[in-house]
Length: 98
Picture 1 (cartoon, helix red, strand yellow):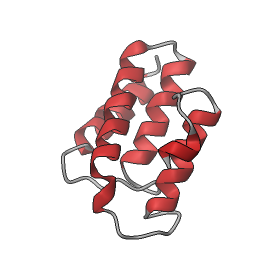
Picture 2 (cartoon, rainbow, N blue to C red):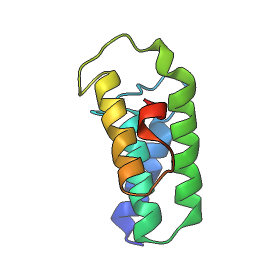
Picture 3 (cartoon, rainbow, N blue to C red):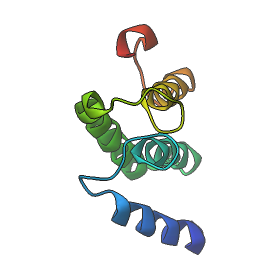
Picture 4 (cartoon, rainbow, N blue to C red):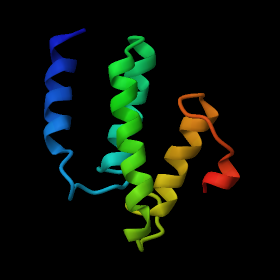
């Protein structure tokens, strides 16, 4: 793996404290998508597990979001989840999940 990717991963992992935002634009949903992508690209189960943990945390805390817009709210999280299911990164019925 490239040094730049390793450095980016270190930076992203340092951002993922309990209070970090959940949104698609600059939050845990975007980091989750990134790690699922890396898991397939490099066939790396560690990245996949990391992405799963982030997604589980999003599911646990999604009820704290009261914004509906795409970039900062529930719509963006829903779009991210739809992408994961549609591209076989995660399994589930999109209608039930949303």
